[in-house]
Figure 1 (cartoon, rainbow, N blue to C red):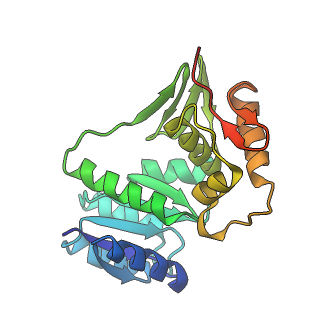
Figure 2 (figure 1 turned 90 degrees about the vertical axis):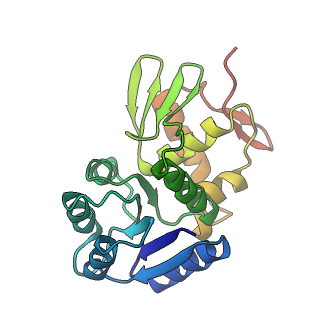
Length: 222
């Protein structure tokens, strides 16, 4: 049975994650500050860490760096409210195995936890998603449209990943809101349309189709 350390100082989120993981068969522990998280992670006994960046004491970046300097190789999934390419790159280059922005959908976190645990057990892992000449590298979080390399914000990355995992499938605004913005989304918001426009601007207007009255779709290549 896998043991997961949740390093999160916001009680509501820690409880949300802990209850969900326990309901899915994981053993969990919570550390509410960076010093405790570092000590527990270095002490062994855990198979994965879910790590908040904004911890009191040592912040998440420091915890991550010191873990890797100590050659602690257990998978780390970072949770953060920071939504910028710079922070994402800093986290991944600092040794994070994955990166999720708050608010988030628990089902996505659960899928990423299972993926990282399989990876740690040397199971095969898909690192690049493709549809025609559009690709997304899940490690560098960069997209390529034809010959053009594209930097994405954290939300844009999650949205494009969702489309690439469901090519040809119509996704409703509600499905996209739930997946990308998680438990804290406003169903009346037009944020999906805003981010789809941003993706089209970066990748090409033809990349995401509007299916009137239904939602959006990433078309299969001809």
